[in-house]
Amino acid sequence: MVVKSQIKFIKSLQQKKYRILHSLFVAEGVKMVNELLRSDLKVKDIYTVDAHAIPFNNDYCHIISEADLRRISGLKSPNKVLGIFHIPDPDRLEFKDWIVALDSITDPGNLGTIIRLCDWFGIKHLACASDTVDCYNPKVLQATMGSITRVNVVYTDIADLAAHADVPVYGAFMDGESVYDQNWTKSGILILGNEAHGISQPLEAHIQKKVGIPQFGSVTAESLNVATATAIILNEIRRS
Amino acid sequence: MVVKSQIKFIKSLQQKKYRILHSLFVAEGVKMVNELLRSDLKVKDIYTVDAHAIPFNNDYCHIISEADLRRISGLKSPNKVLGIFHIPDPDRLEFKDWIVALDSITDPGNLGTIIRLCDWFGIKHLACASDTVDCYNPKVLQATMGSITRVNVVYTDIADLAAHADVPVYGAFMDGESVYDQNWTKSGILILGNEAHGISQPLEAHIQKKVGIPQFGSVTAESLNVATATAIILNEIRRS
Image (cartoon, rainbow over all chains, first blue to last red; front, side):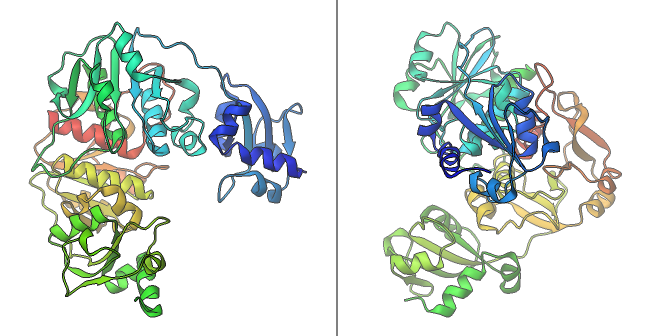
């Protein structure tokens, strides 16, 4: 059974301020929780309606009813398992390879997709401006499809990062020089801006190279979604 | 004022079966409705709380209250204008250039993003398996950012299309030959599969060339999102 105070506590972790306060986050679903259990993340509690849905461990696993799962879940259709994990301390950013940096991404699906892309293209470090959506937001987690365990996400001042990095700083702009015409360096920082406003002006001053994705056919579409732009630019960097 | 029967009628258009029955769809928001008004689409009615939000026309514009807008809107936060438009008859598919074909895409955001990508890369025709999410679904429309007016979306049997087309048929597969190693033809069909199950078996038989996006770093991420995969492959076709 899950008592009232537990329900309140678990539900509170749907909100960023409580995730930060307790340094805990919630993950749901058989596939996602199993993937997190296989990672280096420290688990606090697992609530499941089915002991066979996960590698059961008496220390932290609790069998609960479907009704109780609905009470603690943030999903409309809960999927058997809910896990509570400790938020890990981020690693230091390393500049040996490319780093992706996000200036105020607000859509959880976009951040989740970008984390999944970093994983695919072997980008180990993702820097996010502090007003970027929280990577432990349940919708972000869902969109990462487990990639969150393999990408080091660091919330930091991107302008400061760009100003002090000793690698080239690239930024994605609508009117940037074609990504097809670049001699991509071995390492660098690739900055992508907010969905509506792009890269902020104070940050723009620190960008050494503005790049853009050529548009084909008549110039009509006003922009690309930031996650698809990230996909195309990371592909260009890696294929080179 | 909006009477009860109108509210019921407009709300019914949130559902595919009523959109098909009446051959009408709903679009919301100042930017979206203005973009549709500038296109070739035929408008039926515009409901607005602000006559200055749109090019006002007495024939089809109705000023309503905020309360009434909330009653007819499908959004949590309605944005000034709701328009009802006639669903256009799709054009015939043309094979002079590339066609994108989708095998049962279910996520509205994915379909909307793919329509926006087709627009960006100058792909004029998008073929969708008949169980693909409806392109006039409000969430799809929102994600297209207006590109729906510039891409011809045709619901059809993709296996039949692939079997009878006289252009090369490519399909995206996890284990396909690298997209970097292709001599892309001038025209062709590019097929992308369902988010969870990929391209269905009966359709696979008609595919002449299986292509895939190389993964970098350790092989960890299990797949790319279908919209980001589309972005990368269309970029490869166009840059060649």
